[in-house]
Image 1: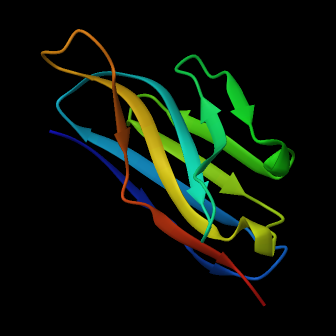
Image 2 (image 1 turned 90 degrees about the horizontal axis):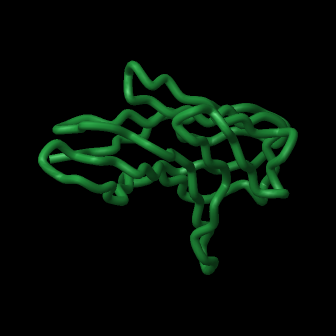
Image 3 (image 1 turned 45 degrees about the vertical axis):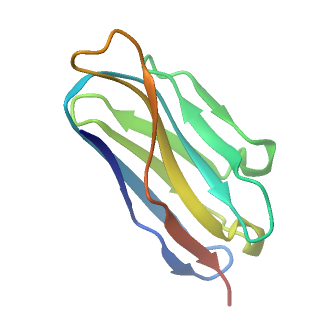
Length: 121
């Protein structure tokens, strides 16, 4: 059983910062790409940032220069540092990872349960 668990969401004022964390646990052989998605009310889920196992990163245009994704491969962790937050960043943020469990010869897509980020004064 493989699980992704996010933490670090909350309420923050515009211009503030938050750091999201996501840890993968369970019967994991390897973790490849990891990423963060978000879904605002009435909108589709969208990619915020992604990071490959080797460290290559990709960001949505709306967060470039404000958000930073990083990972700790030894601890199966991925982080999202969010600075200069705006009200339009308000959403449920989901962790995503391509994980190969023990006993499988291919990656499966896993999702966390989501963590709410609200940017409001």
